[in-house]
Length: 283
Image (cartoon, rainbow, N blue to C red):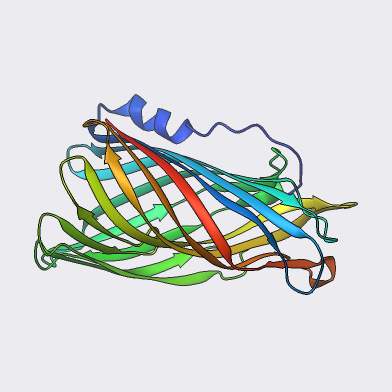
């Protein structure tokens, strides 16, 4: 596929589906966060790196033909980098993902569902996307809910052209009562406790394993990998029945910015702290 800047029409799938039927809307949601990681020194070389990571996801969930649960979403990712090391890094990494996800009963197995998802995505730098930066991750996993308190999931995520093209999906959700929830799932593992009708306390973890096609010196379409793992705690405030906001902080570990071609350099950032602000709107 030839490289070249392209114009994107991220809502084309949504528009087609809405044209052919009148869906029953289950939920419209906006989930947006900013995670700030102050400047930290790096291993084996001079200089420091400061990172601001942001993400906004717009999702629309409904039942097609009164039976098939569908979720469509548009996700915008941004990573801003302040870099004083000798390794040249882009100032901005950007990603744009459209996603379609569906869940339905798994044959005649009681309380078991199959979830399928596909995420056409573009990953680039400095606000530009090229066709060579297109990726098509997908996922498939089973959801088993033996009781109201327990939910288990298991499957696989496939990411062609990434360093790890196949990764297992394993997790569970446990709700021992109306206040406490253990949601240990790959996307955003967390433990939450509803303190009152306005305040929820939570602990959370997560990771970022992204690859972007960038320009380095005279080389185009070079793959840059960004890795990190974070763990922290925070408080969520329910503004009203539509809006929730939260603030959290904690530690961030195992961070690196590394080109796929080792000769182009890598930056391993020392462990540090992060602060995250998040806003969720549900209609």
